[in-house]
Amino acid sequence: MAASIEQYLHTERLPHIWCPGCGGGTITSAFLRAALELDLKRQDTIVVGGIGCSSRAVGYLDFGTVHSLHGRALAFATGIKMARPDFTVVVITGDGDGAAIGGNHLIHAARRNIDLTVILFNNQIYGMTGGQVSPLTSADSIAATAPYGHIERSFDLCRLVEAAGATYVARGVAAGSVQLQRLIRDGITHKGFSFIEAISQCPTEFGKRNAPKGQVAMLEDQKDRAITVAKAAKLPPEDLAGRIITGVLHRDDEAPELSTSYAAMVDRVREVAAEEAGGGS
Ligand SMILES: Cc1ncc(C[n+]2csc(CCOP(=O)(O)OP(=O)(O)O)c2C)c(N)n1
Image (cartoon, rainbow, N blue to C red; front, side, top):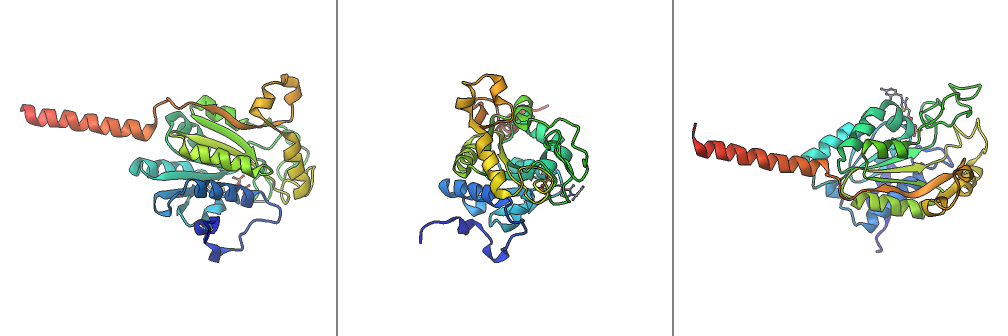
């Protein structure tokens, strides 16, 4: 039988909880197709989720999985990676989970350049809890907590994690799942902190209050607004307003990675201890 992503799924747990038209399934399948390409093994791949619709993906995955606490997926993942640097550790999080309650963990994991791959499903809203604003809700959007329009600006999370120290930063859209698969695959093989912002659609909680409404229109909007880094580089900044720049935005393969530096430090400590034990008082 040909290899299929079903090998990584708890199919007995389906159907999933996601609403019709949610981008969560598309992004999860892009990750699973990347896992298949890389031939990731269930026994040494750990996927950690936080809390929210997106983080719920881990419940359907047949890897080592942890459905952790709201905003704390990176803390769990950091512990796992430090204990088992040989494992592939992937974090699935949402824009509320990863950038609001978990925002401090995100910048520090990026700063440490620990070898984790974060896939952040950005649907611009707290989907699971009824449509409250997140730090990625765009200004003027209507939300359950912003009935007159959101008055705050949103983060550009990719720029934030790059500034914090992430060494692989990429963005894709649910409407471009082949590109997303490639970005996730390369993020997993990159040795260091990899961050992939996956723009998703939530027709239920975001789309019911904002245009464009419905999953088809929302996906078409993603396609219309998406532009690759290479094409964007040829345009003046004023032509990029409202566009979603996709592809690899930043990459550094030279920066030291935390679990490797830690192993080197342990070796140094052992050497010093051996010298002291051998040298007498
Ligand atoms: C400590 C804590 N605070 C609040 C909640 C309630 N809560 C559950 S999911 C969620 C928001 C998730 O938003 P996001 O990460 O954008 O995920 P989505 O559901 O949109 O995928 C909140 C506030 C919680 N579970 N735990």
